[in-house]
Every structure is written in C-alpha cells, then in structure tokens.
Length: 364
Image (tube, rainbow, N blue to C red; front, side):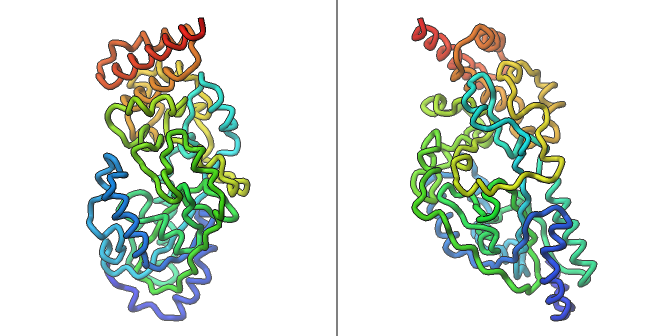
C-alpha cells in the first residue's frame, strides 16, 4: 500500500472523519465505524480453533500465517480499518419457521435468497473509497468482502458495529445480526471508535437451537458440524450421522439467528438485489432436484449459491428429500437420479431412498 496519507492534513482528516458515516449511508451501508488493528485476543482464539481442527476442510483459514491476525502485515502501511455493514434481511420472504416446518420445501439461508452480495458490496466500498479520495486526495487502501484473510467480525467489533455473540456472529443492539460486513484497510491515521460491548448476558438461546450441536460452547463453533459448512464448504459426502439433523436445509442455516432475541430489531434490506428471487424462499424440493446442470447454471448465476456448483446443490437436496415426509413424488424424484453421473450424488440418493422406505414402513 503506497503511503500517500503523509500529504493529507490534520484538518482534512478531521473533516473526513466527521463525514464518513454520511458518505457510507449514501452508498447503501447502514453503519460505518473505524477500527483499531488490535486483534491479539482474537488471534489466540483463532490459533486454538485451528489447532483443534474445527475449521474442517477450510484450509484457507490457516493460510497466510499471522497475516490474518495482523492487517498491517497483510497490507503493509495499514493504520486503521473502516468497517461497514449492510442489511440483507428479506422482509418479504416467506416466514422462515413456516418453511423449516414444511419438509416438502427447501430452506435457503436468507442471505442467499437474493443476488450475490459480494460484487455489490465491493462496488459500494470502491465508491466509498472514491468519495474519500475526492475529499482528501490519493490514499492507500484495499477493499475486502469475504475476499481475503481478514478477521472481519473482530474488526467490526473494534469499530463499534456490534459484538461477537455466543453463536460467533456479529450482533448489533439496534439491528440484530442480519447484515453483511465489509472493510477498507487504509493508511489513514483516523480517530478510531470504541469497541462494542457484549450484550448476550446469560442468554444461550442459540446453542440448543443449533440442529447439529455445532455451537459446542459459548463463542465456540465447530464448523465440521455446522450446516452452513456442510452444505457450502464441504466438497465430499456429508457425514451420515449429521444428515437427519439437517432437515430441509439445503443451503446454509439460520436457526441460531432466528432464535436470537436481538433480531427483533433486525432491519429489512433496502437494496433491491437482496429481494428474494426464483422463489428460493419456499421452493419445493422435488422441483429443485429436477433441475439439470444447465438449468442450475442459468438460474443461479448471480447468486451466492452458484459458488457451490450443481453437484453439491444436488447432494444437499437429496439429503433433504431423505428427511422429508414420504410421498410418491419424492420417491419418483430420487429414483430418477439413481444413475446420476456423480458418485457423491448417487450415494446421497441411495441414503435418501433408504430413509424414505424406512419411513414408509414405520407409517404402515
């Protein structure tokens, strides 16, 4: 990062610091804060999490050495981080609990029912950086939206945007947790905000709500058991012992957020890209399972779901079909893909068929 900040006056920095929240709102962000780079405690927690193997197959979490914990080594010259959040809760989507209670439907994590947020937020962050440069001249920065080894939740906490809850998501007192985060690592010596204090108190609602018991202790998540990890990050077979607990969740999981009391303050998304599309808030599993690879490609391009690809998508739906109440339509859908080209899909189809047949025997 080139250090052009040395040419910027104190008066310019002071004026910019006052104006930053307004500039952020003009670019669609709900909140902005400026964070210090003090992450020592978080670094220790990350090291212990990695040493315990709780990151599963997410090998990228252990790359870059200490740079994930030290933004000023990741991007030399970094002095402060500008952290932003953008609300995504799709208020118009079908009630989440209604979908979870209907085993014939597929549940998609509410952040993914609309268009992919990554490009949208990166563009907004770049526009914010351009706004800053217009006011003070060239400065050094890098934009991040899930795109690099950055402890975004810790930086957002340092920036006063919220605290890291017992489910390990960031929670804001006035906005719950249904929001995305992004960062600008800058070489600007900006006045930082006070870190947010924690307000989970004695509440542990998120822990028993986790279907697979992935929240193994307050503030400790074993990703290997997390449905978001299983349906998105895991490339191979989903562990048999966890399949029934997944229910009809085919992409991600929101249960820990759905039960969080602070989400009574959640704010609806204002950006049109976050509105539900393709009926992903309440689609029938048999319909989704009937998509061809070409249909998945054309329909999911521009969605966060596109990243996992057709095979993982099919694998996830097969598990949900196995967990669904038995029906002729489900048996027909599964039998139609018993000879799927993918061994992973075939294996999950066979498991689902066995579950369906067992459920039918119990019923009779």
